[in-house]
Image (tube, rainbow, N blue to C red; front, side, top):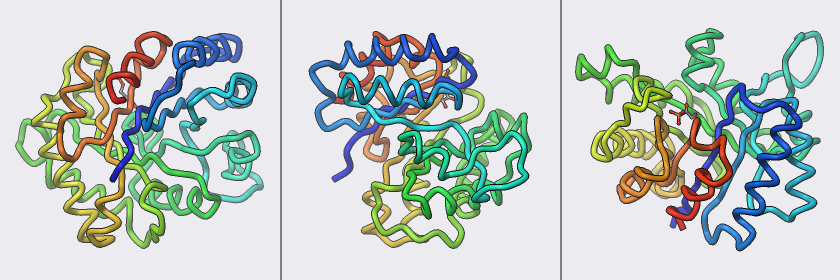
Amino acid sequence: MRNRMIAGNWKMNKTYTEGVILAQGLAKELADGSGDVDVVVCPPAVDLKGVAEVIEQEAAPFALGAQNVYWEEKGAFTGETAPDMLTNVGVRYCIIGHSERRGYFGETDEDVNRKAKALMAHSLIPISCCGEPLEVREAGTHVDFVVDQIKKDTAGLTIEDPSAYVVAYEPIWAIGTGKTATADDAQEVCAAIRATLTEVFGATTADGIRILYGGSAKPENVAGFLDQRDVDGALVGGASLKADSFAAMVRAAM
Ligand code: 13P
């Protein structure tokens, strides 16, 4: 049994002050709880502590996630954030391998794999992103492309608790474009991801790993994705920047 997950990726939006206001708004929207749905918000790094304080003060039913991490413990890595630094401010999840980090900052599958290992060594839960660009989708090789990413991203990982590792399938052509994949498109790739996870970790573990869909997900379309057998939630960009629309997506998952 997999609990659904709705995760918000704020990307490079919201100052500290704005982030605190958004978190307070979300706490209010979700004052009655989120049922069995695991809700995660991933603000920019400088907002993490402020959002953690809101979660604590309001006993808010959502957890804190970061958008990036570096795999070293500490030292001369200017601009980077270590796993320990995340746990110390109350972070529980961390997005890795987002297509924006792969595309703009050169993050490779090998980097994603090292980050996953570093996070898990610190009991942080990776939300490991994969997804194909438009030309791969148009060539019809998207399933092979994503399966290859999953194999590289999970190489040598040990997963004891399947709820402690999350995959997000985000077709790049559907991110921030208003162009969503259909629910069938999402299911096709998410099923292939689960089959690959089964090969790598065995059926019991693979059956417990949450696979999220991301890419122009919003209140109006999220139910269609959640209805799919291998889609266990959503990783939400734009629609997570307003408390009411993000809360509506949480309610749709309840
Ligand atoms: P949008 O929901 O804005 O398309 O972004 C998706 C995404 O990249 C979440 O990580």
